[in-house]
Image (cartoon, rainbow, N blue to C red):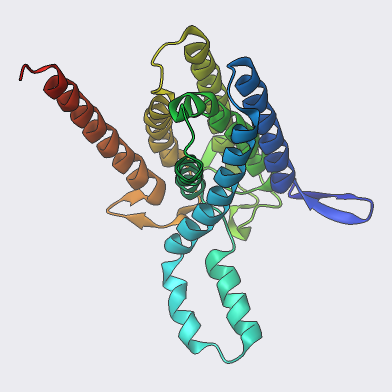
Length: 264
């Protein structure tokens, strides 16, 4: 909505600022909770740094996948500068789901390389921090004019939206609804963590609950440039795939438990 602001003669975007704030708050939360739960704060810091690297790579890769139609431009470039510009078009954005999956992969890679003991306890600690970060990020989306909603009688009129056609029309504030949803999810996961409920399963609880909420909220998004397949958005397809993974995980886990209990 506001796009950016000027500070000390420099233009600063609201989304990068709120994402930075969210990252710092989420990181501080993980550090404090690690100390409280008697986990290694050093391992937590390095695991988070690995996750951040995964977020950066995964977010850009999925963004590129949603812009696959531009890959053909690479064979038409006539200069290095034009090549860089095309790469900027293809990889120049972030998709949350790509960052989420990349971040999880980054954390797992660190845990494997460092032979981190008690990794599920670290997962439980980090799980609430993900929606906490996303809470700030979606506020940034609203202020920055991206991820805007469908045309609606209820909402806000953008003047500095990322896509020019989104301006001048009242739009449903889907970013704020998702921000509130993430805040509630954060509180829910904190309660589970403190009470020891669903121990070592909180990351799966997060994925299951968020994917359902995201699937529904996608119907209120108006930025169709993200790509659609079979009538579903990219994020809706990923949400469904997450549930397929969770169902398979539950089935396999239960079968393993049954096999372990079976008499020889």
